[in-house]
Amino acid sequence: MNARNMSFDPLDNTNHEETIDIAIIGTGFSGLGMAIRLRQTGNQDFAVFEKASSVGGTWRDNHYPGCACDVQSHVYSFSFAPNPRWTRMFAPQPEIRAYLEDCVQRFNVGSHLRFNHELANATYDETAHRWHLTFANGKRVSARVLVSGMGGLSRAAYPNIPGIETFKGETFHSQDWNHDYPLEGKRVAVIGTGASAIQFVPQIAPRVANLALFQRTPPWIMPKPDRPVSGFEQWLFRNLPFTQKLLRGGLYWMLESRVLGFAIHPSTMKLVQKLALRHIGKQISEPELRAAVTPDYTIGCKRILMSNDYYPALTRKNVDVVTTGIERIEKNAVVTTDGKRHEVDCLIYGTGFQVNNPFPRGTIVGRGGVDVVDAWRDGLHAYLGATVPGYPNWFILMGPNTGLGHNSMVYMIESQIEYVLGALKAMRTERAEAIEVRPLVELEYNNRIQNKLKSAVWSTGGCNSWYLDPRNGKNTTLWPTFTWRFRQETAFFSMADYHAYYANPRQNAQPAPALPNAVVATTSAETTA
Image 1 (tube, rainbow, N blue to C red):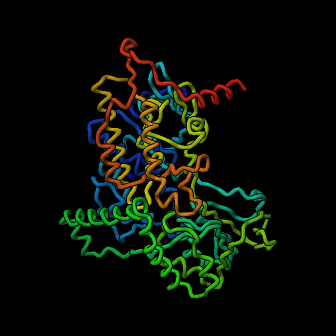
Image 2 (tube, rainbow, N blue to C red):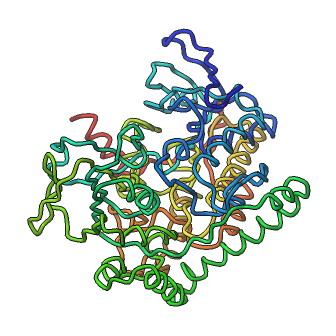
Image 3 (cartoon, helix red, strand yellow):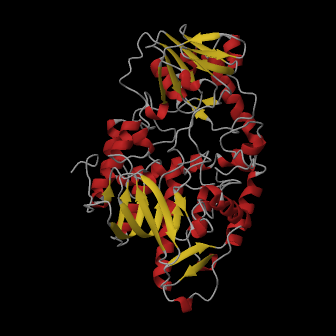
């Protein structure tokens, strides 16, 4: 059975509400990892809902030319599912997607997958202690536990530029790359110079007539230590699995050491910055272009990117790096603030994702009818990046402050998955219908996280990055220290951190935690408006 085409749907009509124990949203590393570990621990009553017709998450949605991982393949994979067949140290997108498809077959979770199920709304029922899910296709599901595996890179972000809707040529975001549009001989504008742009610009530059790259802030870029994985190495990994474990361990600790510069001793980033400047100097000889791509903030303040072919692509005669701000977009041109019109046939947005707004309004509604958009109106927050007061039995994978600037996200995902499994076990032991993190526990945790982040280069490096939430200026994206410390914190689930709800009202001796006054006031005002 092909993982791209598997579909299981027991619902014959849209009026029927299916009842399951656990609903998982998304089939990227988070959703599939959760599903696999549930099966491995004897849980069978769950379903994984996917908006698309195949698995892969961000590695399905992002398929632009040159798309690849910027973390070594041997650590950017499940610890319980090593892949001895990686062909490069940094796997290209098709290989990562194929790896996730292989995991579906390898761990026999295909029967739990429901494709073409885009979550429209999930509302918590305080009486039944269940989540009621409605999908865009009209199907309805009732689940005791809701696990969000949607990740922070699922909603594309577009720039707010006057006239953007008037452009008559071809437009697309890097996440929704239009491979059917012929770029050959076209005048192309690329807006954004982030992680996706530095990968696709070198791929399309030789094909287009002219490429205007609109850069607001240049990124720091280091050489990418990529190379093919030899046939002998692959043989070793297949026949002597411990060799791959040794490589994985070595890579993990090498990457882990980088947090010393990012968050513990930021002054050491000066040496790294010198190496990045040398990289610019080696690949760009023209002084004006070299100055244009040299950042004026401390390296590490924004995500450090890696590429061996981005700077050479910028030196091509048909590529122009435009550092003047964009004033407006017209039907066939991008107009900069100096009045210059850059006539183009195609606009490509490499402008990233809505990291600080992961759920559209109406998607997640908790106790008291409070939308999570309102709960997060002053900025994202969660306990261990996984649970939020007011949302019983809702677990987020890759939630607030679990992102990394130095190591593999899969390590963090696996840590959270084990925490969720611990929560499920504790609920069974306590015979609790639902649990909800105590507001004070979450508040103290987030205060501790933010205090650690204050001295990190992400906060002190002098840049305006997507790590920072514009609503409060806080870094609500990154984990502030070693990843093994996060694993320590998630290794043991404590019921003392949570309020428990029971089926028998007599057992509910303590009242439910009060919702924050600001959230209640906001929700009430919207209800009466």
